[in-house]
Each structure stands twice: as C-alpha cells, then as structure tokens.
Length: 344
Image (cartoon, rainbow, N blue to C red; front, side):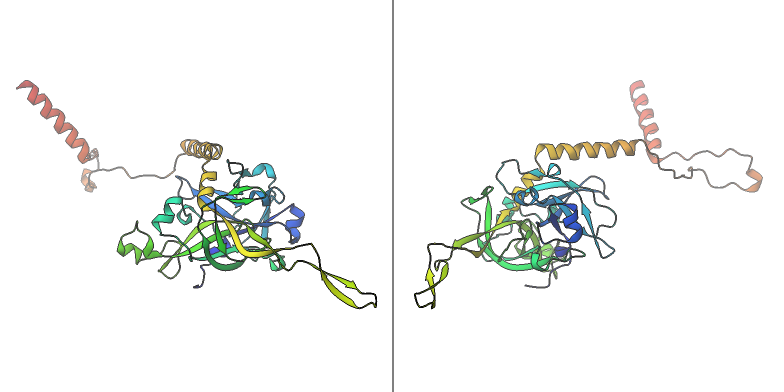
C-alpha cells in the first residue's frame, strides 16, 4: 500500500450524541465523512454529512477540524438527517453549511463507485482497501485524529446481509473494523489503467484523486459494522472443589468474536439516497434562489466605446463615429441583397 493522499484523512468527521460530548471529545458516537455535489456555480457546492442511520439516530452532532488547529461543531439533530428511502439501508445524510474555517476536504462524485463502475474498473476480490475513521481508544481530544486501517475485498455484493437495522446491499471487506468506525468511508485503490472509459494516454497520465500517477481512489461504500461468530470454546467459570482448590469449568454461555469481516454498504446506495426527490427538490430550490439573487445584481465595470482612431488636434471638432461590427455589416449586406433580388 503506497502513502495515502492527505485528503483521504481530512474528509473524516466524528459524530456525537450532543454538543457537550463533542466539545469534550468523549469516546462515544461514530464516524462519517463529507460529500459534495457540484452546482452550476464554479465556487459553490451542496455539501452533505454522511454516516450510518444507526449512528445518527443516537449521535447526530458533527465535529470537524478547522484551519486553526482545533475543531468546530455542527449542532445537528435527528430531524436534520435523511435516511435511505428503502427504510433498510444503513445510510443517512444531512445537508450542512460549512464555515470559512473548515479545512475538511470533501469526497465528490468523481470518487464514487457506481454499479456500472464495478464492471468499468473490473472491481473484484483482493482489491486494496483502506478505511478512514475513528479509533475511539485514541481518536483525538482537542481535534479529530482519524486513523486508517487497511485490507481487501473479501466478498462482492450478492445476497443481502441482515443487520439489526435492515438488509444491506454490501461488500464484505477484510479490514478489521471495530466499534467507532461505523459511518467511515471505505476506499479502493485501483490501478488507473483499468478505467476502460479512458484512452491509453489518459490511463497512463495524471490520476483523478489518485496517488503517484498510477492509482485511482474510489469510494466503494460506507462501513456499517462487522460480522460476528460465536467463540466455540465458550465461557469458563472459576469454581472450587471441596478442598477449596480453584478449577475452571466450561459453561453453556458463548461470546461473540469479531470475525474481522466488515460490512461495507455499496456506494451506489449513497448515490440513490442523495438523489431522492426531496433532496433534489431542496437543491433545485437553492439553485433557483442563487439565480434570482444574481439576476438582481449588476457588475460595475466600465467598457471603452469602440471609436475611430484619435483625430489630430486640428480635427478635434469632428464627430466621432462608432465603427460597426462585422456582424452588423453582414446584416445590412444581406438585407440589401434580398431587396435587389425581389426587384429583379
């Protein structure tokens, strides 16, 4: 695995139950990231916080890093979050307005793996993966200090995976997810030459969100949990015999052990969520408001009129005549030609 680009860590956000917990950096809550949708305005985008539904229903408040080396808090409530429209997919998004002090770099559509993208990039088992999120035992008090973990795709999406909040259209990834990473973005590092939509020259050229010119980073999905299996050894209890000697005896109890297999909800489910009708309507309304605001403004720049060349001093009393444009001359010529043809 090569060195990661910095934005891969910077896109991460933390989620907390309330503002006080966020301010104190309590070891509770989950992870998330920011996703942008471009607009017609070159300098503006719609920005969404992204996480799991099971995270935001208990921890809706967002904390992100700022340029002064500290962090800031967005006091969101559950009402600000929108769950996936199928009622089962463990994803939620919230539109957010970021202050100028924000330094979090944002994942965009160019990074998102679609269903068609699986074939386009020939994505399969063994792809290099990394997840960026919150290692709660050492996540940063004064500001977010996200951690990356690494692994590979272990199983492609197929049969839906049952979880406590519903069925998930998801990958299984061998990335050793633990509590706190829920809501984290999971990226694949793909060789650029596998993008069949690019020419050979483009495939060998500058990467899009990649590393070193040879790889491309794609968001394959969002971590929502991990698979468990029961420990076959069971739980042993300490007992004593009549002589008071200590012994261990197996009990009927079993404990669940982290299998190391993370459940990664496919990124195309995020695309579905971001394009649900009510979110699109909100973006359309804001776009129209921006256009209306621009309609009522006028740029105060001055232009020099197109005049004939400057006259000599003895000719200053002459009237300046504007030089007609080429288009104006051609219009007059066409009209004159049509009139002559009609007379003939």
